[in-house]
Length: 285
Image (spheres, rainbow, N blue to C red):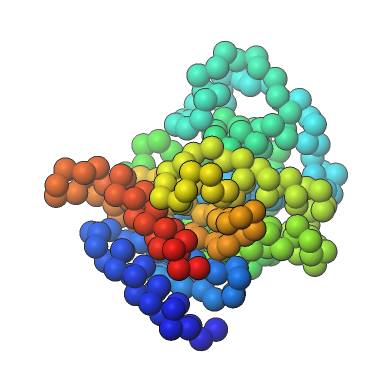
């Protein structure tokens, strides 16, 4: 699609935000009112961090729709599930807590809890989730591990983690959004209409307010999944205005230094960059 004058101005502003930092930022923004998109390195493979969990959720909901897993299955939290886990609250709880698989998916998404992620992935396979992404057209998304090893180096190669692209995540979020009303999108996702609705609400329930959320008015609704990795920070979500979807923003920072020359932690500026990109779209869409 040919960009309008306003979109060209927005792209220039977004690139200036990225160029101001010493690390790579890949992003894609889609105006849901016009269909126009702007991007930078949006088709380049990049570490996914926990943004990968949106596709894990949808693969699980497809399996539930097909009757291969039961969302009401009761799962007992075992100590082994906390090994190599660096996110979420379950790792601090006393073993023996029992939750449903549905609640495990909620914990994986809302608090990015990796104990919950293990609970979900133990009922799927990586090959299943990876094949699911490919079936949706997410050609740069590759699921490689249950949980990334804690001992990864900050300069680890792409092949040692799950990867994705900003464009792949826009495709996934757009399909989930379309599936709220479109039978065709529901068939593409392989999920029942009620689970498509549940998936979007679960994304909206995400409680972390950095990245995409950080520079928006506090009450702004966002359906999103953020992430962190040794190489950078990332976020992918649908931003709403007045109750209606306004735009999709997916942003991935990479090769982020531990600290900037002025002493600012690199991850702080990575998240701030994502926030600035989102605010620029908010102000112009």
